[in-house]
Image (tube, rainbow, N blue to C red; front, side, top):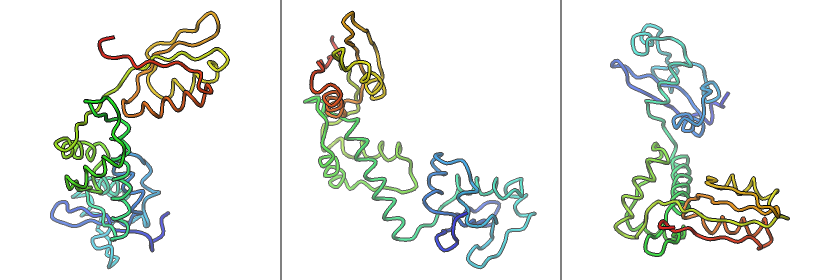
Length: 234
């Protein structure tokens, strides 16, 4: 259970009354985003309050009227999913910074400049976000923030999300060990083992991750892999 000293208040107003629980801010947001399922690990106290700061507990009749249950974990789940989570200034700043980094990483890995078909460096994404004055709402999911950010920066830089198909030939001496890493990097569209033991494959990957993919291949094959970017008209 979470320490009371580190807990913050999650609250909801329902049926004309306020209901509050004490939660860990980090895991509470993971639960809100669907990344955690065990409510008991989030709570600092298995109680639902009318006023958590004063220690005033909510009555069973009020819980039943508002939530149709008096089960603390069930009520807490509703509060976490539908209510608001209070944060200290430091906690809010840290979460915003973490989400901003996640947005930049996602866009730089999945987005490309359609004029050159090359990825945008993370620094370019960050500069565009600053120019567009993108606001990172800590309560929003990564998908929501990415959509908001893309809409904001498109007028400033040419960018779109795209996947590319890369044909790969891996020499026989490296193919068996490299196969799993190559398959896990993207979506394997085609793979054929040649009579000499080499592997020919076509892998679909986010366009912005081409450099990472080629680096992986060079590492796995000591630079002996052959690659070809397949254009849409191929």
